[in-house]
Image (cartoon, rainbow, N blue to C red; front, side, top):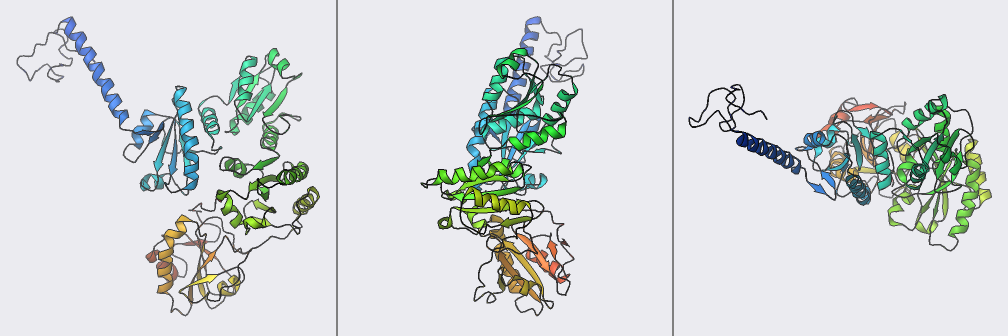
Length: 533
């Protein structure tokens, strides 16, 4: 702060807070001695610090995680330019499971003195913020870098503290760490489930550049590069190359091929997951976010006496389909996994059981012809799948006796086509899941809509539990999904994308599916409750 003196009439008078040569206070002297000048400098500095602390104190913390609202969001981005924000719902099971790991990651970064901070927003309270950032499911996690709020990066790594910290460091630091000595390489390997190290004598070579490009494309795995002879010797590397180190299966994989970005990415993605991986809250992002979209699932109680035998058979079969099919096992005794069993039409007492699913553009399930779990039967099942010789497995409940008793008709797989493709009827269907929060919120409005059209001669309002019924002609990617089947022989399908209000639904139906509708397949996938984790 610049202080006014007799020699500087254009300065700032600390006593009057006036920047001109005129003073409010007639007793104020424009001349300040050196001691007063220093005291005022100290007071000004103290005041600025106090204001800065007070400003940051407006952002409360819970377990080292900043608690953000609409009122302090912009302030938080200014104070902490690199910030990871979780949009959550208090009732969300996934959010509750993430909370301790999220807080642990926040503490790890804070203890390191990192400028990166973690924050959270209750999206059920801060609805404007949630809408602004396109929150469609919980938790939604976004990274704001450099204080920019317009286009945050979606968090795409695992849900353990180490995964979160590694991802953030990769996002804010160099893509490839320089490993100048053995201890640095040892630490990189010891601190991570998977690490990739390039051994290049010439770190400016074409191979090294390709490695750096591959590293920039992967967020959740740390990359290092060394040219040090001692590191080569320690890890028994005799020539330039790339090695993936991991804490499972064979322990390490050595790249063998032409050093290009594409080849390196394929190598890493083929080897970064265990041959057989357990489905948990923490591994789910790696499973769903991976390149392999064909998954075979073994539902088995881990407490069973023959668990290890089943695992041995499963793992033996997996060896022949590495890079083609991801082999996953799910503990059928865990309460949190019951939704997944339900999704595949299974009950605990029916386990162990095998199912296969593809997560491409259209989600398709397959069921083996035998209940036997042997390496031979699993291999045969997977071979038929890779050859395109399996038919999809479609679930259906029995038709309820009173399916058409209430204003909202109940559809199942066995009566679906007969009802919705009746050429004389306009049928509006909600595809729901019993556990879906969004579906529960919609239920009273949907019932009112059914009541409104219960006496209509050509409009039917219906619903179908898509966790227990599947239709080959209709693929459901999220809950609730709303589709309109207009009368006629064309079997048209129109997705509803309008407001989920009685007025919105009514306008849609009265307009013949034009107001608030879009051709099937062009919906925004607003809700992501199909996530069965």
